[in-house]
Amino acid sequence: MLIRGSKPVDSALPGDFKSRYSRTGAVFILVVVCMLVLAALGVGMLTVAWGARRNAIMLKSEASAMLAAEAGYEKAVYEMSKQPDMLNALEAGASGTAGALSFADSRCNYQISLYTFLGSRPIYRVLSNGYSGAFCRTVDVYVVQAISGWDMGMCRVADGTGTGIDFTEPVYFADGEIIDVPIHINNLKDSPDYRDIYITGSPQFKQLVSMGEPRYTSGGTDKYASVMGLFEQGIYFSQGDCKITDAAAVQSKVDRFVESTKGEFKFEPAATTDLGWLPGAQLEFFVEGGVGKVRITNDCRVRGFMQDSDSKTSDYRIKPGSDGKTYEKYYIYAYHVAPDVGGAPVTYPIDQTYVTQSYGEYESEPGGQIFVEGNVIIGGNNASHGGDDQVIKGDVMVVATGNIWIADSVIVDGPHQADGRPSPDNPNVLGLMAQGVIKVVDPGMSGYPAGGTNGYPGRPDPNDPMSVPAGYIYAPVAHPVAGGATYERYLPATVVEAAITVGGGGWGAENVIDSSLTYGGRKQSAPSVVQDYLYLRGTLVEAIRGVVGRINRDGYLKRYFSDERLLEGILPADIWLRGKYVPAPAGWHDYRSGG
Image (cartoon, rainbow, N blue to C red; front, side):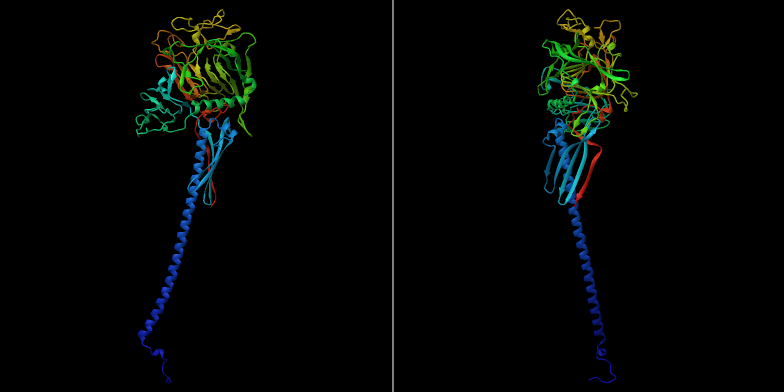
């Protein structure tokens, strides 16, 4: 019963009970708030974790797509390295010009195409798409065939008639030499495995060197540890071989060259069955009235000479039709004769030989092309072309299925640098490619007496049918000895400015012999001169090294300089043979789509 004036019932509750009730409510509220906060944190952490995992999955997929695209590019470049001629492969749709790869969590496809020509140098495009999950990464690269300054099938010369490495000997880079040219040497695959570059003393290699072989033997021995300090720009190992030793690859280049050459500049000298006589065409380059010209005498016959013993000669080539490792002596140049009736030489402006290499809608810049089914002699009687040397004004490439014999200094017109090399802005260039050898002749050979201890053919005799065939006249080459007869001739220090490609052997000089033998060797520029200099300003690709000279004995001393213009592809015709393709400057692009 409520008594008037009294307090409410709850006000009569004990004070400690009221306090506990209030604290319990506050704790409950605090717990709820904490749970809400923790729940929010948990959801946030789950969101972050899920996002991180999602991002990780996305990054992994994107990285896998990129790696797959790069793998497709590497596969494409590998397939390109296997092709004898890349343009021919694209025209034929050859295997490897497109393809696909699959991996555990990704895949790719690639396509190779011609992008354009830079001068006469093809620029190829490799487009590779990599896929992983929802991601697509693309690698889009413009590549070019690598060019060195001096490519060698092997750093050895043939020293006998036979098959295999036993019929070759090493060529050493010697103490005191300065080699200012990029070098590539194919993998010799010798056993036991030694260095494929031969060094004595401390020559200096000023530019990059690449080797087909690895640095280490299969047993882990470092073959290069003792010589690495000689290579100022270092060495790249396990690089793709040059295809100069692949007869099929060389033939494919020749076939393409013939196909694109104008008909009037395809020469086929008349064949001959006479022993020691070889078919040939003579080319003389000169400038007249500011115009570059070439004087061509077709249907010449070269009087060849061969020593009767392997011990008397260094003149070997790769035997045609062999496996590329069989060597034989060959007929070197003694002299040649030209048709006396109906075979007058014809002179052409070099630009009349110009054609373009083409592929579909793409065309190279124009360049001169001359093809000879047989042998070529470059040089002549200086009075016939108004100068002491062969001078090239224009861009021209000469290809021969036989040998190319050089019987004069061969230089390009236009500005040169202080060291003698053509200036970077010099537009004139010469290319020489032979399926035989390319050699500097010994023009004095015909001046030596016939017979005797040397067995040389001697000077030409119009009354001797074995000396000059009926209907032909003697065609002297190189510089005459002052006051001497036409058969007394010599070559002084010789300069050759050209890109040289030798498919059937090596580059060098003929009739280089060991002075310990009892008969005369190369005719030097003067009796008091032991050796002359051979200057090569250009590039050189040779299947096997050729003999240039024997130190302090006979022949030439080398003076080689790279012409960097040739590395930029200004040479007419697509005749490059390196098996390596590299990105063009600023030629790499990659990007993503999807995801």
